[in-house]
Image 1 (cartoon, rainbow, N blue to C red):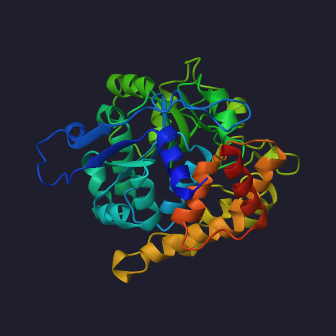
Image 2 (image 1 turned 180 degrees about the vertical axis):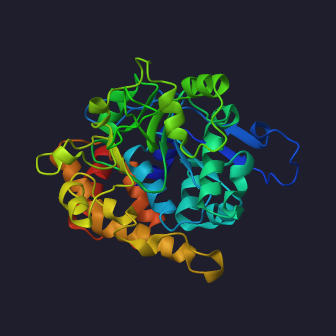
Length: 383
């Protein structure tokens, strides 16, 4: 099967939405929700899956949200890695003033937009200009203010949404196990210490979290955050403590982790099935516990790669560094992901998605023999 036929097959099964955020400064009087042009194409709900379990997520019910207003070198990689694990889902990338040009021009992000896998939305309110605020406290407050407003959740296009910040990483069980948590209104990594605002259930970190849109709307319409509130996840957690749809911290540990409890450090800690966020562990522990199950996670851990922090656009190297990081993942860590999924007999690594990454997104083809063989075998299977 030719690359073009594979591309056609991918476009048929992938279902795409183009939602382009206009420049909000052109008409600030318009409500944010009316400043995007949405064009729908056929849904993928009736598509077939290459996953041996036969399970495929419905893109009209679940999407991935990446809210990032900074021009970060890790952004293209986090978006692409999320697409790799969930090729049937659309990714909504919320951008701001400082990275508007970046998300419209960076190679990998542009390719994903052209293929219908990613659509763009401007961050609402003050958060759109978040990086013009004077310090971290003001920026964090603006971010939390956005997420604790009903206007933010009205921009989400599906009933369920997987929110992933740019210091998050999907693990190899993500596609298989995410459905285990769809029964909950909110789930994130349990905090490693008891939070006084969430005394019953310490769940959970919002940086990588699965949320129900209607539940978020109910909370934000019923309660107002404190003026100096810096943590949107604590806001939601505190108002959902008695909800049966907020899991216990023991259940949440199987969804995501940000660190280990003290008693776990000398034993076998519970590993997450879906992903991780901002791991607060030593570099050695990250490599020891997480690289096997979440290959490439060290690429987004700033304590391992401090140079991969925010860069100034004026340096002129941001786009190339972002693409270099994508290539590093593809050549060094992506083969590990394929090998692990093959060992577990999982075929959710959609062969069409793999081929697109190998032949369209990449400046040079993937070199690892196991990946090359896998691509060839799956391409033959589709003929």
